[in-house]
Image (cartoon, rainbow, N blue to C red; front, side, top):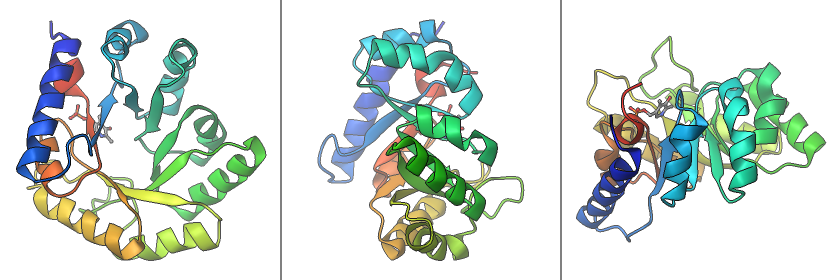
Length: 220
Ligand SMILES: *Cc1c(COP(=O)(O)O)cnc(C)c1O
């Protein structure tokens, strides 16, 4: 069985090396440890080893394990990295510190409503479907800059960054470059890109956060 605490160290070391290689300041890239499908007992040692930022892709699954873990470790920061249904906006705003998957008008409107109602302040990213894949969530690249603007001006949402999941079978480099370009055009600073197979490349392309699951917790 994979030792998640050992693997966490390996991944952190490789991120640090990628930062040096890219001549970026050490510690600039946030590691989001993706704990989807793993239960609280698998996650707790990783928190014990010092990891504080985690990602989950389903609201309902996260609700089953994170309220108790957050009570135990109040400084944990939880990111929603999976598609958000508008009927789950209330729960998402209540549980997550960062919602990375804002990708359409209806979600933006629901989030704005819940943020006002709950007085919560989740940080928000817009997900971009850089490969224009029909089955994948995310706004089309050509609409992304205007959508960020509408989130701000129409819905009063403060968008901090962009997120993408490149097509599985393609070289991710051009997708990371596109996301970085769109972020500059939209005037946002955070870039969530890179997973177990390509996080070092993402660091080279300017990722500020990488989402790594199986390289830490093992295969799902
Ligand atoms: C599962 C998931 C990850 C992590 O994937 P790994 O290949 O296991 O590192 C990253 N981002 C998103 C959006 C995911 O759903």
